[in-house]
Image (cartoon, rainbow, N blue to C red; front, side, top):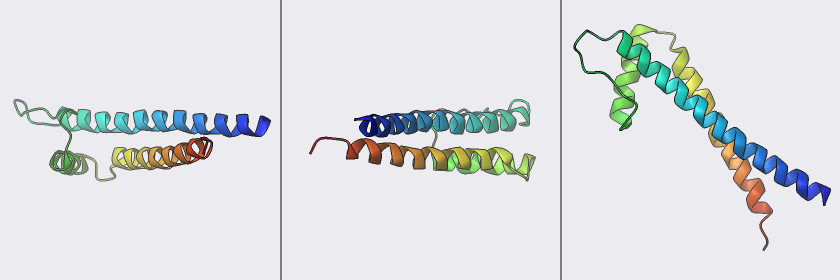
Length: 101
């Protein structure tokens, strides 16, 4: 019984970490958009995080890399996004294994 509780606890903790990693990943994107908007020409249209798609990602990351070639926010986003995916897979695998057959 204790083992089952520990496995459920681990699955739920992994799911909670998935949510935390998602928030951190999105925060890195928001910071990147803020940097791009801060360095944009006055009167130029501002980038937003709404309506995110591949073309917008390429445009924002290209502008961000031009501002900061080291691109630490892109690396931070990729790290947290990878952790989110891995943690989510672990959470669902652990919790699905506990489902009654």
